[in-house]
Image (tube, rainbow, N blue to C red; front, side, top):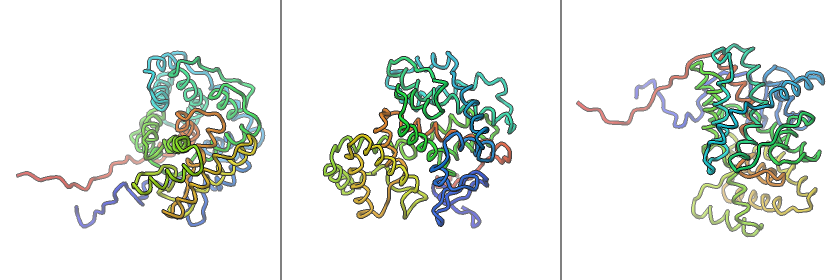
Length: 369
């Protein structure tokens, strides 16, 4: 390795792109989205408003918000052939693989596939946002031998997504909390899946290919899947005392404990997790059962005391989704569905100000004569 070269394992701390989309300001404790604090946005704005902000550069007024809802509803229906392809998948297929397959198959229905101009990509992003929830919900249903659920045009975007997942229309509280979770998952600067999408896009590959790669990235247990793992731990324990024992045992054995710590939030709690913690409390109060809240709070205290690390979004999103009646295998696909808008925004930005990613390596192999 030459004197001018430096090696950063995992690209830790390396700035790989300039962006106007988002920034994790760990000093101020803000997740900046197009100049706004995502946490504050999540308290007053809906997911479709975040869609408009990320794709159309501004928060919408009432008419523009209605227009976004209308655009998305026009794109709900999936080609029958895409559902037929998913029906060919084996029963054990994870919904993330069903999502990856369905998303890739959609590209064949785009007559402008090779056009990466901004206007075409924004229109394409709306099409994807309309269709991804249907792929998420119905790939799971099809793989588990259930009939697909058709979208209901009279419901809001988030309520319809919830309906296709659970088969029931949400209460006002359920819709509000589910929508907030989508907002909180919508965009988060440069995690592995976003970087993957931008790397693929830098070759001038299409939006479907970039997002298909992002699905593969998010499926990995070190990126997505933490929310599923958290829920399995909670169900395995079943009580506050047993959950404490489980975590302490994992700590003694130096096992990885999902739902805690974050590469960026090193010494404080993920601010998104605080909002999902509040949401969990509201759901527990509404259902008259606070067991999961007490278990999670106990686990939070143990990890802070023993390791000095704090919950990330997945830790509290998991029991929230469980209380909403959402099947565990859908937790990560929902994460991806919410993040679709952020991924699309990054791919559009990459295409508009492109430079091909082509890093070098630190070679540690042999040299032969």
